Length: 456
Ligand code: ATP
Image (cartoon, rainbow, N blue to C red; front, top):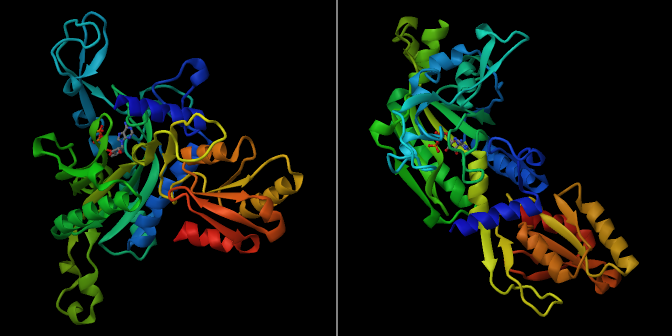
């Protein structure tokens, strides 16, 4: 199955989804850059998540916090202490370092040398803020996006009319100095998270944990991931991160095994209570429900209003890991091909059956041949007309069969072909990527028809 990963990595590079970072300098730190198709698809994933969380769900607002925060944040959150460190061993011979929990034997996997005793290695990336590089100017690149949300808990509460239970959502970069990055974009040192922090009364936390677990699983299914490739995994108590009361991961069956793509965490009151302690600001929530009810106001005076640290249910997904998941799940190879080409030899065809919401290119405009100027002119006019409405590509090179294959390989949902009839009838055919059915449509009806097909 590693073969499948090689094919995906090669497709990503060849067609402009993902390139190795700093490639002309030999690469850097197992980082990756998203190319023209990759950035479209990743934006589509983030937009699908944002819509689901901030529009479809209720009582959730968005936030975009700074990556650099006061270093005190990471003291309070526990990330600078042992809580966010991996246990590393070093080979006494070749000095390579490994994560202890990833090792199968007590020997160096690279040279067979003897290993040192394990030592903690912190995953936070350090930098300096301002012109002087001393201890006082040390700052950290955030290792999780959620801390920016906790710091703004009061700001959001005071500037909105939200009442508990409510959520704050954020998408953004996070950085971890991973010891063993790998499996393409599965584990990198710079990545994007899509996180929801749901603030609720402690008594309702278990109920909401189950609710969000269900909603998040449904999200992957609704975007086409096959059911048999997804599962929940309850993390045993002894393996929980320092902040967590309960964790259930959503796992995907990657070619390299079942692996986490998202974590659902009950963080209890760890974050708000620690930030209260360290900042001296009272981050408790005052339940106004009682006092805002006129009949109860006489029963409960100000003193008896409940004041508590809300519990936090967090859903934390990786945009890059989701990207890899959607790519792998959509990747289909058709032996011998399915579209006619002029070549007698049938080739293997790749179809990326991405959900139409996620496909980087929605519509391709293809004149049947390129040596008929009126046809090319008309096709270009159609392309210009559609461009403001949909992400489109225009392609006139090679046979029509080859062009269909090129579009199928990048998951383009609809191909529009203009043929000789189009010149007389002012129409064209729409070809669906998955069914390969073709339908003739009048050009003056095209935008409406495409909207119907792409948005429903
Ligand atoms: P892992 O056990 O794989 O290191 P984690 O349990 O540390 O992951 P969380 O802290 O729960 O991960 O982060 C939430 C999500 O952020 C993960 O499910 C994943 O999608 C994403 N993520 C975390 N670390 C990385 C990374 N190094 N590269 C890419 N995505 C990541």
